[in-house]
Image 1 (cartoon, rainbow, N blue to C red):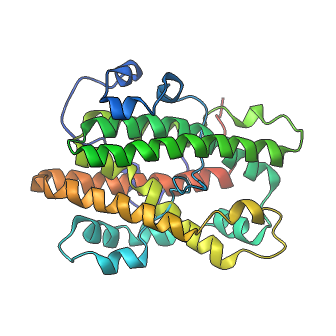
Image 2 (cartoon, helix red, strand yellow):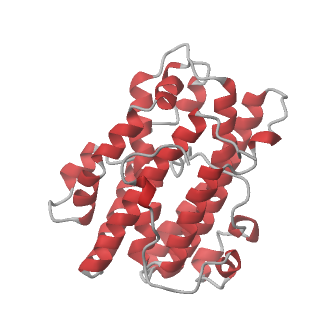
Length: 294
């Protein structure tokens, strides 16, 4: 795995001990409001790959700890505490050369194609993890909220594949579609966390897809150049409407954290930080055009 920020090398799955995770276990019956928006195709585990950009906002989930969020949450809230702990990871994300090249338009075409193809596959698996987390929620309103995000994610996956086709300009993009090691690991981690953890632990592992992407979106929106050939696509980053979606996702995490034991809150924090590190790792893999060594 590419060099990760400090602490990323000791990733471990947290949550109640259960039998080893199997992709087939993900196909169990879920509450109807979750399964109605997650087709068998969406539930397929670890298929092709990811990018979170959604006109509806569900994408570009690479958002992180918006300044507004820290100000609007009480000091004792779980999110305020974990956001502070994740600041160094956010700084590493925003300082990454891939993100800077994406914003100024100097990024290599192959890196764009890699990123879009891998993100499409990631999103397919992310929707499945959202469905598993949705099934753990007791509040019908919370399930309805997450069900909408599942639909948004599916729409974003389709949009991402359309972008891939557009930017490949007739070139065969199939070689970029196979899940790379970092993508596979991230998707597997989220699948396991959403399968084995409590509702709070599962949601904490999935939250960086919202928060870290928001941070990246704000960064790009402030630095994108007029002549950037990808400006039309990148304009989706930093959408103010998406910030509202992120606020709802963070509020859900705080509600779930209030129902956790101190040990459960600690596991939520570790899950969140692990996924933040993997968000960084995904950008880094795109920069390096990561592939299987054999």
